[in-house]
Amino acid sequence: MAVPAGVADGINTVWALVVAFLIFFMQPGFALLESGQVRAKNVGNVLMKNVTDWTAGVLAYFLLGYGLSSVVGAVTAGRPLDAPFAYFGAPGQWVTWLVGAVFAMTAATIVSGAVAERTNFTAYAFVAVVMTAVVYPVTTGLTWAGGLLSLEGYVGQALGVGYLDFAGATVVHMLGGIAGLVGAYFVGPREGRFDASGDSHPIPGHSMLLAVLGTLILAFGWYGFNVGTSAIYGPDDALLSAQLGRVALNTTLGMGAGAVAAMAVSASRQDKPDPLWTANGLLAGLVAVTGAVPHVTWVGGIVLGALGGALVLPTYRFVVDSLRVDDVCGVFAVHGMAGAVGTLLIPFFAVSGFSATQLLMQVVGVGVVAAWATLGSAGTFLLADALFGLRVSPEEEEAGLDASEHGVAAYPEFTGGGSPDSQPVSADGGHPGGETDD
Image (cartoon, rainbow, N blue to C red; front, side, top):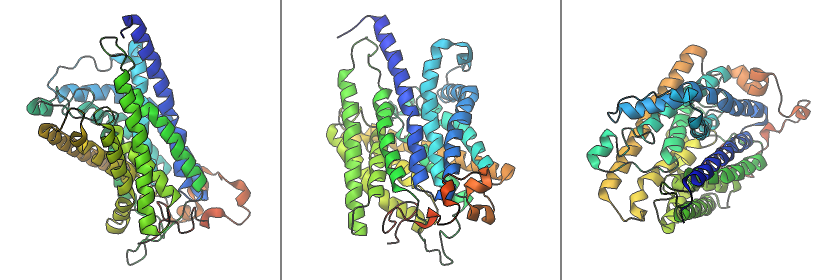
């Protein structure tokens, strides 16, 4: 049922604001999730990085990132530039900018969990600014801003279809997951993570409570991320009830299937179902369906979510055991792998039926975004290392970044002795930050 245009526009604007606020609430979810997976002596540093992601990042995205996205979109689609920074003085664009900003902050914050416990704070702050000012905006320029991979872009025109990534499975999450993996590689593993033979040794996080609570807060915010990407009323001022329902359903089924699949895999590999692996599977299920939610059937929502969740633990083991990369919070497994798999497989479960051309576009699109994520983040971390030095000293790492980088203690009552840093978050530590070796 259609409503007057002014009413529809008003409802969509208020909806966009509510969505932005809801996505912002994912920031404390990330803070809790990451804090729980590091040792007590580094919790303050994790909190500081999460606050910096938002505060410094949002300024960078306003001053450069949002406009740069429009520039990249125009250039990679052969369109003339049309005052890409006009939003500075255009109040009508500020709500849209805010929605873009909370998405940008999500991409940047993902990186924090991968490089935790040994990264120079100044270098990290620089990385967060560049991620939100340049790396993420280039990705949105190639996709959502009508650039290279969109129907209007050079690749889209050649194939006759546009790249499908509804709410950022690759544009946001795979980007952040790959950037985190690259950063963890460049900064190197934590002291004691690997022995002289290259075998990994668990470094348990200090609080499963915080990690799982953060997971559930992220899941709540994800409804804004996915469902909020859809407007309430469409171009013809008709209620988009079918699309909203499909997006909400697939979001919910994806997270459920991801958690159950991860629970089953952890029980199979570690004899008992692990709470934190289950939580990570829930997030991976959400990531896997984020690009697909309006495009696939509910069967597809379940299958994609389950695949994301099932692959989390083996992907994390591959990163640690084969690549020898110390990704503290498993961000590549949760965000990078799940984002790529979920987006690639959209055509197989599409409501409109399978399309080989669409599959080709999905393969090309994931490849382009992955390549830029790798190159852009590698350049950013190399520059940060040259300017500030990526890594703290061994003495500072041993003391903990709370004390060495900020002069604080997140748990001051423990400073007199009996530090909880050695206490595992589960009996066998079988998860990111403290997994068992298979």
